[in-house]
Image (cartoon, rainbow, N blue to C red; front, side, top):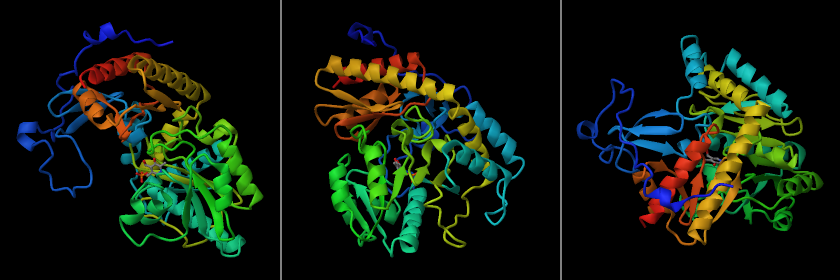
Length: 421
Ligand code: PLP
C-alpha cells in the first residue's frame, strides 16, 4: 500500500527550474513574447500567464524553463506522453511521403488503421474524423439514419445528466452539462437526459421516437463519475429489449485509458456505435466512429470530412494503437492505475475527508469543499499539472506509461500544495 510520509513534504523538491534541453528557433522568452495574456484569442478559455514550450514523457517546460509534472496530458490526449518516440517516427515517416491525397482517394495508413480497429474490436465499419465532438456528431447522425431506415423515423437519443459529448451544437444538446441548453438557443431537438447510472430512469425515458441510448462508460468531464457495476450491461440489455442502438462515447475512456482498449470491455459489452478520440492520435487530432453490422447504415454522401482519415493522422494513430492494444501494455496500464489509485487513497486518508474514484489511469479526488481550482493553481506553482474537473473534483489523467516514481512525485507535490492552502 502506498503511504505518504508528511515529513517528506518539507524536503520535496520545488518545481524544477531548468532550461529546456531544446529551445527551437521559434522559442520566445516571457520578456520577448509576453505570457500570452495579450494574444488576440477569443476569450473562451482561462489560461495561466505562461507559455508552454516543450514536452517529453511526463514533463512539460514553459518558456521560462520551469518544469511541470503533467498528470493531465492534454486532457487525456497524450496517451504515450509528450512527444513519444513512436509518434515522432510515424510523423517523420509519413510527412515525407504523403500528407493528404484528399478524402476522395484511399490512402494506405487509413486502410490499415480501419482494418486494425475492425480486427481488434469486431465492428463492421469505421469512419475517421478529427475531434471527439465530430465523432459524436457523426454517431448521432448514424443513429438518426438507422431510426429512419429501420424504426419508423425514430430519431431520439437518450443521454445522461453530466455527460460531455463535445461542443458542436448537437453534441452540446446531447451533453448534460448544466446551463448548456441556454448558451446558444435554440437547441437541436431530439435529446432527453436521465441521471447517469440509473437504468430504470433510462428505460422510463424510452418512447416510440427513441433511436439510441448514448452514454460515456465513465463520465470524464463531470469528474470521473463511475457508474454502478453492471450499468453498461444493463444498457445493452435495454437497447436490445427495445430495439435501440447503444452508443458509447469512449472519447476519453477509450484507447487503453482504463486498462482495456475500450472501457466497455470491463463489462464484456459491445456497443453498436463507439466513438474514439483523444488518445487515438496520442497528441495528433484524429477521432473515429466504430459501427457494428447492425448500425452501419450510412450511404453515399451521408458524411464526410476534409481532414478525416488523412494519412498523417492515421499513420500516427496506427503506431499508437499497435503499442496500446498489446495485452502486456494494457496489463501495465492496469497495474499503474492501481498504483495511482493507492497513492490518491493515501492522500485522501491523510487529508481526512476526501475520496478517490476512477479506473485505470483516469482518476479523481473528490474534495470535501470547493477548493479544486485554487488547489490546481498551487499545484502548478509546485510544478504539478492536474485539473479541476468541478469545483470539488481534481482529475488525474497521466500518460499511460507513467512510472511509480512519477506517481510518488505527484503525491508529494500535491500534498505540498494543499499544505499551503
Ligand atoms: N466526449 C467525451 C467523453 C469527452 O471527454 C470529450 C472531451 O473532453 C469530447 C467528447 C469532445 O472531444 P473534443 O474536444 O475532441 O471535441
